[in-house]
Structure formats: structure tokens, C-alpha cells
Image (tube, rainbow, N blue to C red; front, side):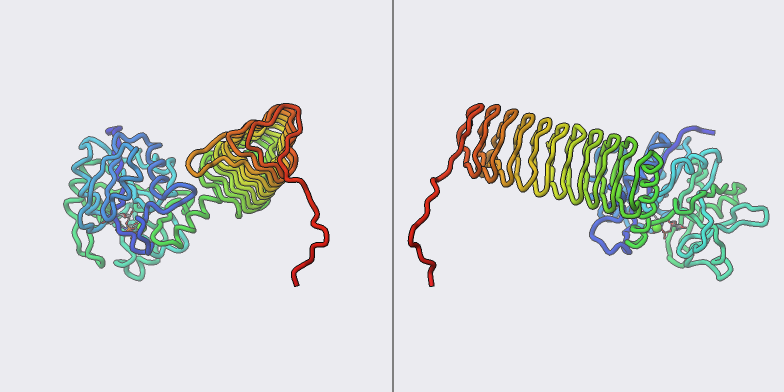
Length: 449
Ligand code: UD1
Ligand code: CA
């Protein structure tokens, strides 16, 4: 038997039940799209070829996957899953095994797909309590697959069958071509069903083997948004479980969402409502408070993030405090022992060892040294409407509250800036600099009546 594997992914259906302008397989699931998950799983089998059958709104799909090594095949005028595979067959290597995946069942596991490859023809099934909507696997008394009957074509007694079709089948290319030539549209939907192939094969003396998945969730198909949400929940249960097994504490895993990859140490604590997006690296003893959003961050050992903070493309060096209600935007680096408190926004800003911006501040395009104190209400004026400029704050500086630092500007080592200063020129090292109109009192002033 050939070791060559070609995979066909069916994604030409209209996805009418999603009620969406967006192509069904491009809907989001655990930080990626439905089709991304299928493609990623399929690539674990190292196929020689991956053929994607597209149709309606195919351009959306092509541009989403434009970096992937895919053979694109258009199914004009889709007439069912059997038709979709027929359209793809001319692109298949004739000496290959062909694995057909449905584009809308993203939870299937590579380990189950690999089991199919031991046979010359096989399909994936599951035993479920509620088989409604799926094709039923009809076996004869010897346990051989005689046919698959779609819900809409099934008799009352066939509907009682609880072994369902995943939509995923595998066969040798030559045989598949021969069997596909015999399918027809004599069925309730007037379509060319791929699911007619096993009955034709059985009559031809090649009964399909069945690989039953141990977890029936893994063959769940997505036809509407309810099923999409169910798949999301199934994935989140799995993803949060993986992190807990690695030593992460979660106050309530059902409220935590993982939308990407997390590289985790131990004794990390994650409170309710946290979203982890993209690629995050989280070291030991990090704690993340309730309702934080952490995207593409590297959090050093012992970083403490208090509730309702939002961090994107941030690096923390560890043992530092962030939030509550902090917003750290891309390019922020937080040093050890540093503190960024409530209602502080940073962007492209480095904060050094033991430096603090505890409240109500905007720090953009800014380099802050060690042991600096940034008073409440400090604003870096980094933008003149066209260009961005840098603010440099050297070690041991104290910036008084409600100051504006008009970039480009440097506050030299050990300088103190008086509260309420508008700093437009560099501040000298070790000196007090302030700009402040003298205070006066208007004697005898009367309140308007
Ligand atoms: C299909 C199976 C059913 C199985 C179920 C599992 C058939 C006839 N039925 O039903 O036995 O239990 O999947 O989820 O195969 N597609 C095309 N071109 C077409 C039609 C469909 O590319 O002309 C694609 C769709 O985009 C989708 C996949 O094939 O990704 C399955 O099609 P869908 O219409 O969702 O089939 P089901 O009714 O779910
Ligand atoms: Ca489906």
C-alpha cells in the first residue's frame, strides 16, 4: 500500500445557516478561524498535497490562507459533498491515499485521523446520544458498513441508529475515482452525496472500516452559530484544562478564554474573566487579576497584574505591579520592582528598575530610567499632529504631578520637575525645574450674582 497521502478539504458550501456575509469556515474559534484549526490538524499528518475545494466567496478564503501551501480547486455550482470531491480528484496523485475532511468540523484530532491510514478505506464515526442531523452508519450483521443514510433520507428505524458519520473518509485514489463515478442524485436533497461511496464500495467488495472516536465531541460539525459557540466551549474546556495540568491556578476556568498559544510556568494564578490572546509567555508566580486581557506578552517571574488591565505586546521583567485599570500598549517594557497603576496608558515605553507611574498618566515614546517617580496626571506630549517624538527621563528623576513633557525632551539624571510644569526644554541634572505662573489673589473680588 502507498504511503503517499493527499488531503482534500471541503469548504465550498454556502454556510447558509450561519446567516452571515462572512464565509462559514472563517468564523473565529479559539483565537483562529474554523479552517485554521482543520488545516493545522491536517498538516500533522504530513500530506504530500492539500487540496482545498472552495466555492461561494472563495476569494475570502484564498486571501486568508494565502501563505499556505494549498492546491486550490473551485467547485462551480456546488451539488453536494460527493460533487466537491469529484471536482478535486483530477488534482490527486493517483497512487495516493485520499483523506477527505469537511471544512466545518474543526475539533477532529490528528491521532484519530492517523488511525484511518492503516486501512485501504475507512471512515470516522462516533457514538452519540442525539444523532439528529448527521448521517447514520448502517452496518450488516457481520458489522460491515453497508451504507450511510442522511437524516433527510432515513427511515424511522434508521433514525434510531446512534453511530453517526463524521463526514471524514479515506480511500485509495483509484478506488475512490471508481466509486465516485457511480454516485447519483436519487436522494431527498437531490445532491451528489459523498456518503453514498461506502455503499458502492461495499457492493464492490471493499467494505469501509470504521474508526470510532473516543470523544464524540471531536466530530462536532458547525452549521450555525449555536454549534459554533458549542465548539468554542469544548475547545476552551480543553485549553484551560491543559494549563491547569501544567500548574496554573484558575479561579473559574469556565470564564477564562484562551485565544492562541500560552507558554506557562508554574504557580501562575489567573482570576475570573481573563482573556489570553495570541502568543503569551508567562513565567512562574505571575498573577493575573479579574477581567484582564493579555495579548502577545512575555511576563517575567512574579509579575502581578491587577484587575481590568489590558496589555498588548508587553514585556515585563518580573516582580512588578501593573493595574488595576492599566492599559499597556505595544512596545512597553516594564522593569523589575516597577509599578504602573490605575488609568496609566503606555506605548513604546520602557520603564526602568523600581520606577513608578502610579496614577492617571500617558507615557508614549518614552524611555524611563531606574528609580524614577512619575506623578499623577503626567502626560508626554509625543505627537505634533504629524510626527512622533521621544521623551527621555533619566535615573532618579522626580516628575511632579500634572506635568506635560513636550517631546523631544530629556529630563536629566536626578532632576526634579515641579508640579504643573509644562516642560519644553531639557531639564538639568540634579536641579529643580518648573514652569508655573505666579499665584495671586484678587482682593475684594465678588462672585457674580
Ligand atoms: C455531512 C454529511 C453527513 C455528516 C456530516 C458531519 C454528506 C452528504 N453528509 O452533512 O453524513 O454526518 O457532514 O458533519 O456528506 N461542501 C462542499 N461542496 C458542496 C457541499 C458541501 O464543499 O457542494 C462542504 C461544506 O462547505 C462543508 C462540508 O462540505 O464544509 C459538509 O457539508 P454540509 O452541507 O455541512 O454537510 P452536512 O449536511 O453537515
Ligand atoms: Ca456540516
